[in-house]
Length: 125
Image (tube, rainbow, N blue to C red; front, side, top):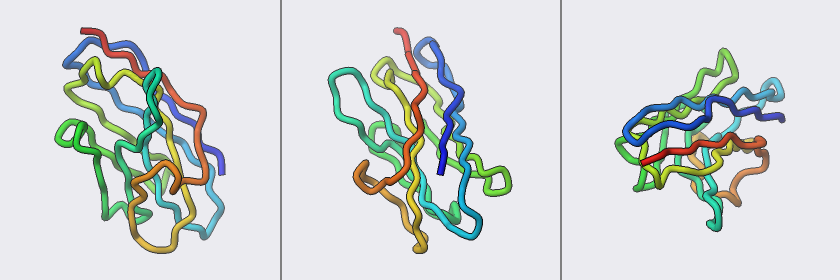
């Protein structure tokens, strides 16, 4: 499985960005997916997760109401719409995936098996 993120950049506080994750998946296998971020000097944390059907989502408290995770299985692409960005959202954002038959979300970085290379998001005040 290969994951490739895009859409990062430098924006001012209050702006929006949409990250994309293009996934090459094995046919017939379902995956739980998520977005994680890592700021300088901090541990990587999962900020949003989605089940393979898209029917279940989860967000860390710090992004609830501002970020929206979604997926398009026809395009094998996952998105993270980020609104009202804050300087504390500055980080490298990673796409993650794991084979999962159950329709559940994965909330921990240790839950994921596959990772993208990351895309930088910088929010200036």
